[in-house]
Length: 195
Image (tube, rainbow, N blue to C red; front, side, top):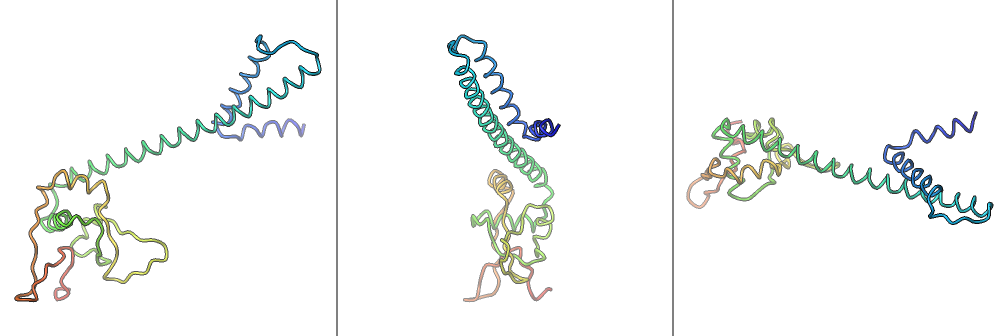
């Protein structure tokens, strides 16, 4: 009875491995009845048949695992592409509803070809873009940051649509100061004097 329980453990294998085992067994069964195997002494035939059985089943398992891996890779790639298409469609549909400030922020980033930038933890004027995922915080485990300088990025899917619809994101620099102290301000930053 214990041997039967161990035999049933094969059912815990992954589907690709079980499919490979079935293919290997089918190939072995075909070899037994086909004229490929030459007639020989009874003992040699048994050993040769056993060796062919092991070889065919092993090859079937390897083949099944390779097919399972390839199907998984294709599935992951298709899933990523579907998510990217959905994200582009969501952003494209939302462009008419962007506020003028949000358009200015995206226009600044597009004009400067800047996908990564520093932003306050609350998002400043880009809070709505952050909330919808059109701008995202990035970082790695253990990375230090302060409350006024977090790393934010424009996702690739959003960037593609921004480049397609570049006329919807006008660039008009905001200048602060006068004389020699004139500098262009980042449109997502909230002026410290108004906080």
